[in-house]
Length: 284
Image (tube, rainbow, N blue to C red; front, top):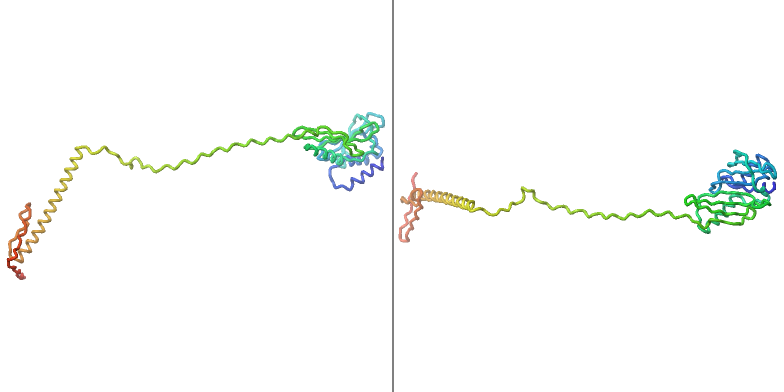
């Protein structure tokens, strides 16, 4: 028995540092209490392993055939606590123990993959499966999300799966969040066309009244007459100036402009047979 346990200790010593396995916890207990002490071990438990648990609880009988015993807690390589416990079942046959907790997890994980069973952590229970003390691993795979639990019983001597339960259950898929329908975005309103201010808008009248039309006509007539008088006055002044220079050079007494306010007299036509009298030079 001691030879087998020492062989297990040598095998695990070559592994990289990690959380203690069940064998390592048994070795720590044997170092503290003596190799013969662990011969009365009835069970080894580990909870929430990922895959190895943080601590192991080892229950040992006080003596062969006794139901009284103690449970020791081993964390890493430290023996942290012990308490009185009632023991049940036969002591483990350590000479038949050939599968450590990491090996048991490998077997259980392989079975879970066959049915796509998802889990978050594993719990271990190493106990005597018969009166002969043949050790058996019970590995419980726990899915915290769906509360599903699968149990795989494995022989700690041969590594063979003895039974399994709950591996058909699968993690329920998380319902996808409903896709919100896109809210149509209204097209932008066209910019308003320029509208003239009220004072800029042309006022549509109904047409001038007769009185307004008459006043407009009278005003137009007055302007026409005034313009005509101005035109006549300028024409008369022009004729007066012309008569002045004509009389100055010819000695005539022509008056084509006429009296003020009269129409200008027509300029006399010179006959073809009339002699042309050259105007005399005006002496200074």
